[in-house]
Length: 251
Image 1: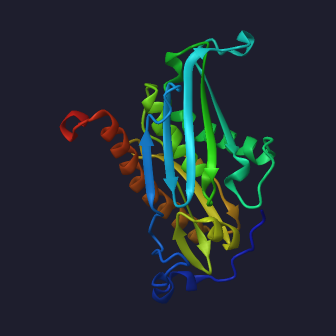
Image 2: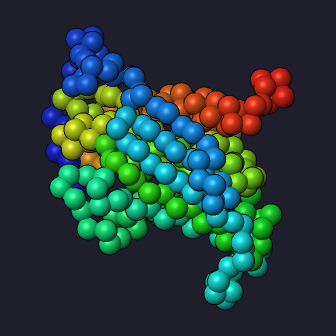
């Protein structure tokens, strides 16, 4: 979906703009309500469930397992495959159950965001499949899927360099805001999804839908990283709650 170009300039940083509340009552730098649970699918090697705003998403991880056909196997590392799918009832009006170009694109985006964090070299000639099923969509499903997929991979026992945390920031009505919902995503001027490795301080995904001045863009990235850090704490709490890891043991 195309975005309109921002017409405001320095007015976006005025005190009056910063104090504006959003249509759902949140502050500009406030996340939507977030809930993550791990190990929710008994038939998967690892799984997670996330509610991010009204987004409701299930993720299952299967593997590492032998790649089929074998000719697609990589001799020195595993292959990570991410599949994103929106259920027909996840949006109104109902959508076709067939995979769309957007589903394929977001699956690739998930792959790019998560792959740098996984020790793929430990499982040569194998495949790790990540399936994300969107049960209800409320904007920002790609970032929510990345967050849930990371928890599911840890639940599956896949060694990772760091947790991948993902959040978006954007501009609506000339105001920079965090974690855009569906209305803000559709009506705003631009959005900037980011995936981040908090301990390593590295960005694994950076996109922009819309047109932004450089200063506003960098402010959006900084705010999105702040959101990633908040989400990272919730991811860690979900894993600690499941496995009873204390703060002392974690360190």
